[in-house]
Amino acid sequence: MVTSTVAPTPGRTRLRGFIRLARLRFLLYNVLPVGLAVAVTVHQGHPFHPGWYVLAQLFAWTVHLMTHYCNEYFDLEADRANESFTPWTGGSRALVDGSVAPIVSLGTSFLLAGLAALMVAVMPTWEARLLATAAVILAWFYTAPPLAFNYRATGELTVAAILNGLWPAVAAALQTGGDVPPLLLLVLAPTALLQVVRMMVMNLGDRRSDEAVGKRTLVVVLGYRTAVRVIVTAQPVAYAMLTVFALVGWIPWLVWLPMAATGVLSGWLVVQLRASAMRDLDAVRMTPVVFWASNHVSLIVAAAMLGVLLDAASRGADPTAVAVLSAVLLAYAALFAHRLWQSRRLA
Image (tube, rainbow, N blue to C red; front, side):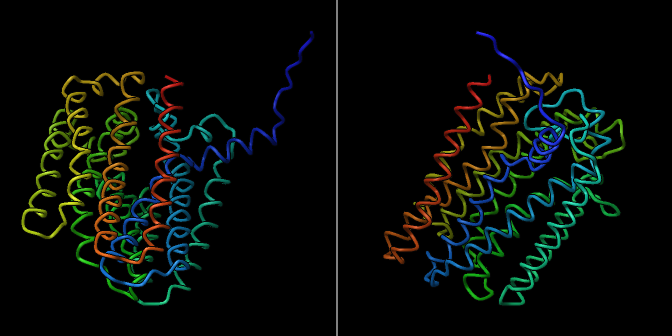
């Protein structure tokens, strides 16, 4: 039998590169903070508004995509210098390998910023609009000048402020008519700390190329050894914070339990960092570390959502809302299982 290989056309190559720029694997995460926020409002007795929930989720996805396309453009020099990239760090490589022109990435980010602005405009309260506007601004200037937070040692904090602060706050404000329940902020606090150091782990892998092009991430400023100490120390601090909140009665124990169970991943991460898995910038050794560091934050937020839904159900909360949010959580679990299977197959 004779087989033939047909080379991809330039149009197909550009389309594939454009899709790579989106880095869609990272968009799976943001169903969790949005879902968690809505679960907390249902737990606190607020009525469930499916339309505003959908808008909050679409807004998070739009801003996330905008950030990816914007970052790829403004991080191009750093990505070109990066020779130790992994599937999770170093950008999509679509601009680096010439699959897509840089101006396409920038233009797409402007279009997505405009779409996000339209979503902000239709939000019903000034509180939601203010929080959403802050999210768009911080996301845009994560790498874009003149602020370029990730070039001034504040990028890690910016990511945590958006993903584990503003996005869920917007979702909550849309459900409640403007309020953000204190329970949501308490649950998010330890996850935000873990998000900061998760971004530090990602930047550990990029530190040599970042420093070469003048990109001063927190890891570059602190240096490798100090950065590792900060990451390692933050792990028990986050779980101690969570436990204190439960002990004083601010967080239900049914929420604490699944969140605390994710501490196993914290312990594994500490072992890997102490074994210098990120020191030599070996992509093979780094890949599982950055994979699990990233998914550690996802899983603790998923655990929080699970705990809130269980506690809400035990208190007789709206069964329809609990069922819808439970379905979202189950869908995330299925997609995460598929991702895990894919990562093991590739390994």
